[in-house]
Length: 331
Image (cartoon, rainbow, N blue to C red; front, side, top):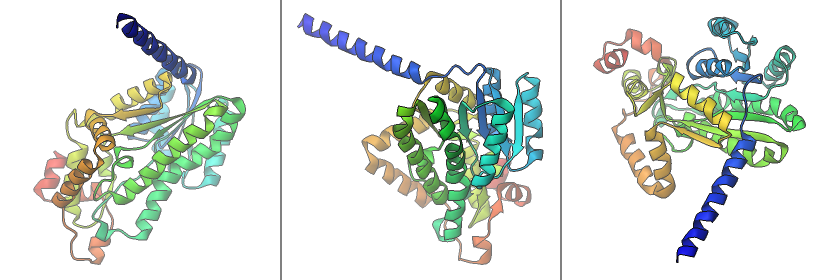
């Protein structure tokens, strides 16, 4: 019996050592590397760009508007790293290819890609149209797909590189009143996992980051449909909830950068998100029941009208609404 236990311990130790060796081969020393962070003008993208700069990366950043990048560019320059900032609509493959070519010319071959850009549309399914789903795929899935396809051939040719997709718990578990967003994030998770399996042979590593709720201020930039005040109230309250239900953007960025350095394959952020992912793997029926119950508690769709189908930005709702729910989010 003693010899069997000893033999099992040896097997476990060898397996752990092999796992550590594999992770080390995928890991990345960021000092002197070139990183491209897409969607870096605010929130998590901005914090990831700053965290990479503190690790010694040369950093290229992009957003739709050049003006939106000015403050982040100044922060990066103040950290003493080489910076390239450029406006780019990531929904356009042509613009993305120009961005990658310009960033490469300015800073050298891209070693690390972190696509962060995404949009949020909140509301009941009765208010959603095919155009809303198309927009979600363009603004969430394709803003990750296009940069990945643009940098991948050069990474494969060099037999080195990392792509860190910033997905969402909504890409692991379907969330009511976020169906277009969830559908696009599921597609992004599938892209990350399929790509990881295919390009590992080429020396390219893919990390899937699965954030739970984050305190990034993104709720004011989200768009809502249906009963705008009630939709904004529940979504804003969830996006500003305290720890451990949420994580702030700076802390999330530090953990993402450490996962890149370690060569992790997946990083789930927040204890609540980890619990949800594990529960969905073990008891998907139970998680589905919880989501159904949550759906019953969310605001009902109003009588279909032009106002019910109209998109409103969270900031507009917050500034104009006298409701107590919105006031709670506003603080």
